[in-house]
Image 1 (cartoon, helix red, strand yellow):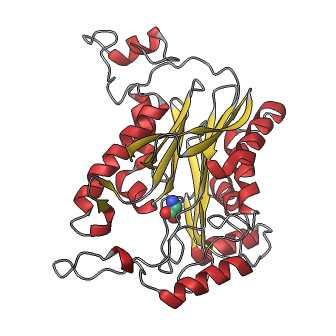
Image 2 (cartoon, helix red, strand yellow):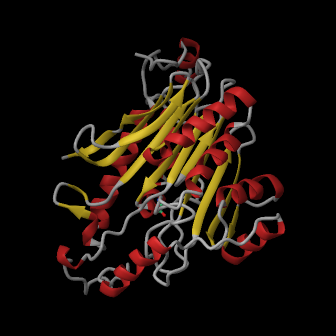
Length: 358
Ligand code: GLY
């Protein structure tokens, strides 16, 4: 059976000579012809209810390109001091410095921009958009990214809030897990009691589809709390924390960035949609792949695997060119994890599928 939204013509094109119609999976290199969407759609992590509403409004009413709608939408969360995982109020690195990662990707031009480990800049996603639009590069990091932002009129802003500073001080007082590992071969099983304070991976991703079928996406984060200075996660890495192909769909990730990097997760989700998966199936496929990799990874990092499932959170979000959308999360009880979506019916939270349910 064709997935909803993939036309018979698309299947024939994808199947190629000698392959029966309906014999999915399609060869990975072929792209089906998707039906046009009914209207604009945006998906994001659960902290992005306002983000997706804003993105859909800007695409529908103002014909803003999807990547800019996504960048504007995540800006609401970047400026929210109560979100401990993004922008202002984000938790700092182990030295108490807030360093931000962000990237965006534009479907129609297949161009992207990103900033990694940037400091003092409230809206790193906007800087990433400028890197995309105003340079011939994709990635700028650290001081170079900051200087580029200042050159373009961004004002230095203190991002460490009093609340985030107090949480960092509490972690530093205990400091039982700082991401450093003993050499291989000399590594003992980790006592869960020594894992210390919870180390949240927050982030916001937004994938946006305009009514004309064009796509764009953006991911922005303060990264892993109390990280080793200089660490960047998946969010500024194209194909890892976000990816879009204007002929297929858009995807992104939140959660353990190292896992999204090691799997090329967002690229994989888009390629699975190209091969015929629904967005939810594609997200589940990528998470199961990550699960297999985590099991191997447990040889070098025991805390990656907890008996029958990975021990870390990771969530993928996806929207397909025809407007079908979905999300899946690594862990949790069915129905317990949510993602945000907006379309012609308004903005709402919906349940993520779960790859390793408890
Ligand atoms: N996914 C965000 C990070 O790991 O930095």
